[in-house]
Amino acid sequence: MKKVMVLGLTTLSLVVFPHVVAAQEKETVVATAGDIKPFSYENGGKLTGYDIEVLKAADKYMTNYRFSFKKTAWESIFVGLDSGHYQVAANNLSYTEARATKYRYSLPIAANPLVLVVPEGSDIKSLDNIGGRTTQDDTGTSTAKLVEDWNKEHSSKPSKITYSGEDVSKRLLDLENGEFDYLIFDKISVETIIKQKNLDLKVLKLDLSANPNNYIIFSSDSGKLQKEFDKALKKLYQTGRLKKLSQKYLGGSYLPSKKELGLN
Image 1 (cartoon, rainbow, N blue to C red):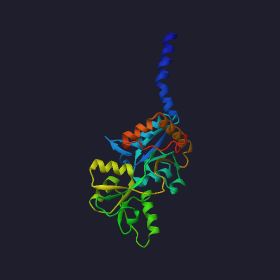
Image 2 (cartoon, helix red, strand yellow; image 1 turned 135 degrees about the vertical axis):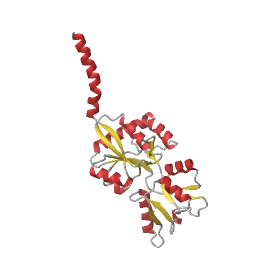
Image 3 (cartoon, rainbow, N blue to C red; image 1 turned 180 degrees about the vertical axis):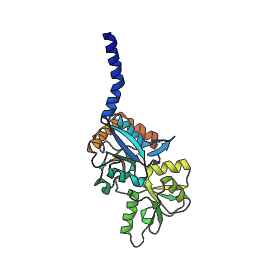
Image 4 (cartoon, rainbow, N blue to C red; image 1 turned 120 degrees about the vertical axis):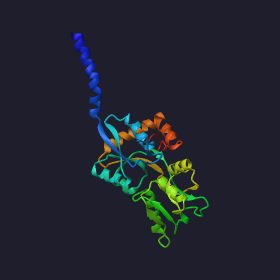
């Protein structure tokens, strides 16, 4: 009888224990627009992409938190961080000083410089040629700020920005169709879409001093979460998992340097 009772208690503990562990983990909501392939997009109704899979892989090393993912509009991501609806943002996010004053940045998860995209045959060769030309962008992005700052320095002949709210895939199609003159966006995204859709567009390197890396962003009160994620990110780098995710989703090894990850 005692043996039966002991066996029963052991079995019960095996059933209950996973739920106890899960209960100890704090659910952490990650906001993403889910419309920026290959970083965050839907496949078969489920969110995936480099940013999403990096978070999922890091989650396995994080004992105190459990990520869940919420698709939302781009303009709602930071509003949600401010209000406490979300604790994390993952959306091919670059570094800006304005964001850094309000939120916490992870260590870099990828190296992804900005590029200039123009139709084949365009006479635009660099930022020196965008005066009087037109582009499309979203409000509050690092690329929009780049053009806005350029306009301040070239006020006699500024570039015109239309804040369209369209995803980058649609904007690239519109660029090919001649609806505007150029687009500034990140290298990995535009090269992925141009190849997939066989677009007649040219990608030009930009000589910028701006930080070329991508990050995960955390709400201002998520310091412990950010530090635990950074530790997990280092493990992903050291085990080679981060490189495999980069090759699978980004089409190559677009990793930050060891120095940037504090591994030297």
